[in-house]
Length: 93
Image (tube, rainbow, N blue to C red; front, side):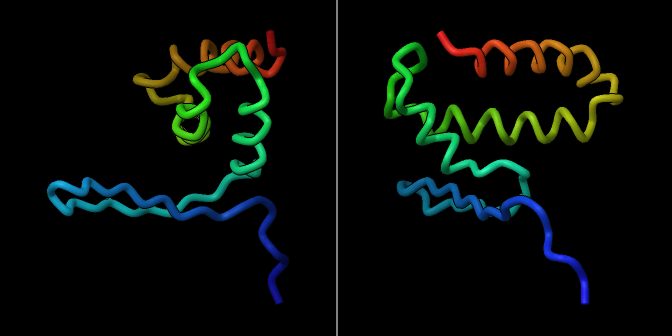
């Protein structure tokens, strides 16, 4: 029997109602994205509260891609800056 996976498994669905276009994908992350969204909603030094979910999800997806591809020339310069940005974000206002 295999050990249970650590972390969280998510399914994201993006729909454009006017065209019925739809994209769905799944990803794993060590963080509880819903808990992050709730924590960010309590801050008043960030984007408008209604934008918090897209902000948080965007950061988690970008961060995962950067981490997994940090040696790729396209991402190698961005990764250290992203790490600095995340440190500032976690420090808070």
